[in-house]
Image 1 (spheres, rainbow, N blue to C red):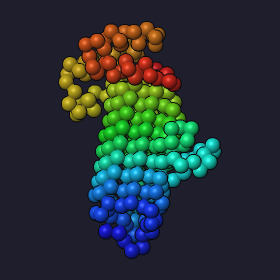
Image 2: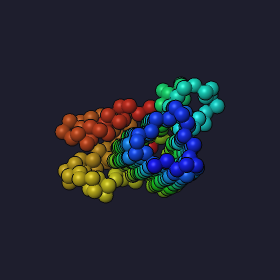
Image 3: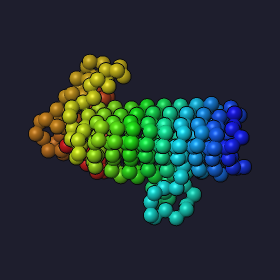
Image 4: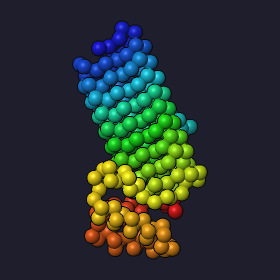
Length: 256
């Protein structure tokens, strides 16, 4: 299962059925779980832990040092979950000591060609990053976020669950759950209704989310007033409660 031209460090820990393609390099401190397939010409450096049934395509660079001038070779790491697809020329960097020490990728994500995940980013599950989408350091992507091609996210931003960021978006503030944004600079353009229907949200739940969006973006309320209105709507709606909780923990404020 390991091509004879692959270079595997003696300290790497590989499950018995891991596949390693020609000329790939697996460095010190790398752990790879069962069922994972590594294509030719992939470089994985450690400390990096990769879970089960992942597929990593050719020329990807996984677990290299963070692109941060403050980094001084501290023992930080990259953690990747299960069933992720990481396409050609993707770059995923380890964390930094001052940023928590770990970059983390969840499960069932599709990370397309040329994407970049910088140091200390935290990605949830079922995310799609289309070609050349890029994350600055410390970005959080919650579950089921979609980033269009060439979307760029400023460091320390948080992108809420089920949101959709259009191609070429330049995002410098937080994006609340369910919201669609696009443009440079990015602006809100309604809720991700199509995505919510595909994910099984009921008509009532989607209507509750629409009401929350109107309170936040269409009512003319100041942000602090809109937050109070959302708290009232959230009493009978777990979907709106997700938005309200997000706003309570937004450090950079939101796109508005």
